Length: 272
Image (tube, rainbow, N blue to C red; front, side):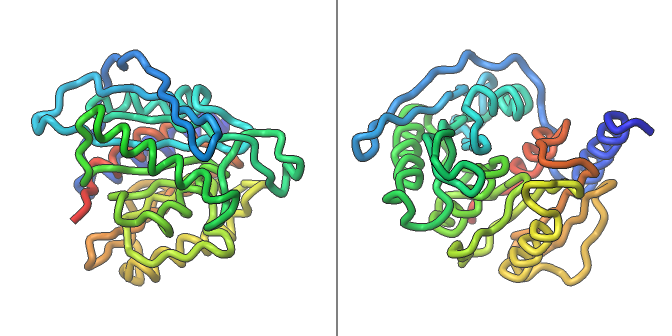
C-alpha cells in the first residue's frame, strides 16, 4: 500500500476509534474571515491570526483553540496546515506567531519559534499568551472552561511548557512531534492527545513515547491502554484526564487528518 493511502487509512481508523469512545463528531462549514490582532510585549510587537467562530454556539460562549507553528513556520502556514477554522466552526481559533528564537538547529536565532523553558527570554511567549488570552476573552466571549492548546514540533514543546506553567488555563493539550524538555515539570493532571511519527528524524519516536509515559504517570492512567483505532491507544484515568497516543508511520509532520482527531478530542474536554 502506498504511503499516502496508508496514512489516510490510519487516520480514518483513528477518527472512527475516537468517535467510538464517545467523542463528539467534528463539523465542517465555511470558515470566517481571519483578522490579525497585535500586542506589544516588553517592547516587542507580537501578533496572531484569528478566525472568529462561523457557527453559533447555543451557550453564547465560544471554545478557544490556540495553535503554535513549528520553528521556522508562521501563523498562516499553521492555519493552512491545521485548518481548525474549517473543522470546528463553532470555535474561535488563534494561530499564534512566533518571533526569532535560538534553538539547537538554529543557533543564531534567525527563524521564528517559541521559548523552550521557564524563564527563557524573559518568558516572552508565556507573557504573549497571557496578553492574548485577556484580549480574546474580552473581545469574543470565550468560554474559559474550554480553552485548548496545540502545536507542532517547537510549537508542541511550547504546548508542554504551557501545561507546566499555565495548567489552570487550559482544558486539554494536543502536541504533535514534541517532547517534555529538561526543566519543564508537569504538576497538574490534564487530558492529553499526543501525535507522533515512528520515523521522526528530528524528535526521536522513543523520546516521544517516554513523554507520553511521563504524562500517564502524572494523570494516573490505567496500566493498559485500549485501542481507539489503528495507531491509536487511549489510557483512561479516574481523574477524567485521559492520555491518547496516536502513532503514524511517517516522519516529522502533521499527518493528514490530524486536525479532525484533535478537534474530536478537544470537544470532549472541559475544565472542572
